[in-house]
Length: 242
Length: 125
Image (cartoon, rainbow over all chains, first blue to last red; front, side):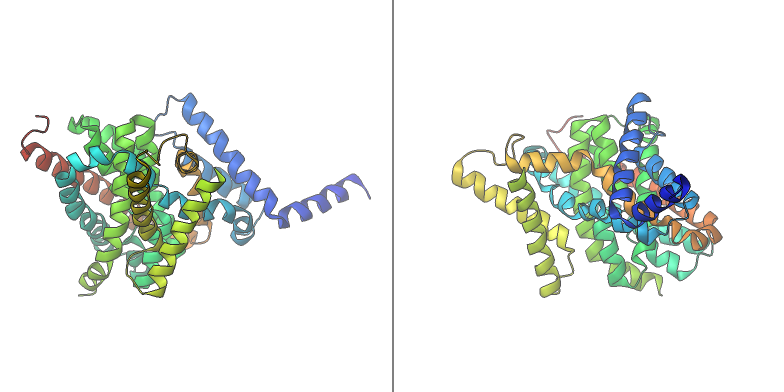
């Protein structure tokens, strides 16, 4: 076989094997994480955003179908479930802190969770977005594993929801630090809680970059908002159908 | 580490089973969190030690996953390639809704948290 034919056969093998895209996903993320650290954890240099853009470009250049990519990347995707359950650990470690702020936590959750859903749906419908998009937007502030379940329950498209969830997480992670500094808020419990409620796991990852207490409260908000949104989403659905 | 990962998976499995089997409107992973919290509380009460410490199997597994939480969102995010046209056709509505809603949600949430915590006696001024 001539060398190009050899390479072609190698590519045919690799392109069909889950090994390639699993390795690429982790490798690209590690590089993105390194650039984020080199920038001093600047909010704009978001490792999740950089990774997604890089991999999307790689898929387009190599003309690889998303299903082929996901066959490899699903092993990473699957860990979202146990990682969500793992939030119980920082919650338990910070139980004294959480107990001391129980009232602000409950109040912020009761107001914040419906705000996250309604504001997105109202803005989207005011700008003429079709129902498919509006439904997929409802659970956008909830962590991916839970949001996709909620989307399925209310008749939305889970894969579209996942995209909105991740976009919301990246947006929140980028704007939370400058926004909170602008508002002059130095209470890291409050900042973290808002980041986790609005921007779930990606906001929580950002909060942990900034401050440990912020991270714990972000994880708490993410877990509570998953619960709250699952309970309230059917009511919101009834509201937007009126 | 392996034992810790097993505990996390077992809690998720139980959570999913209860959620689907009994048609509870709470997602499986959320029930899993509640279950694990309960487990930790019972364990602490039984042994008198902290079962969630960093050097325990569960602590190691949970810290490892949470430290790399961002990575876990990448495969689903790459899914944008599938709905590119639908999103692009409504890009203004989507972008404004996502950014606008994020700003509103962050401001409202932090505001309520601060107002209520300041109204409480004994917490910082």
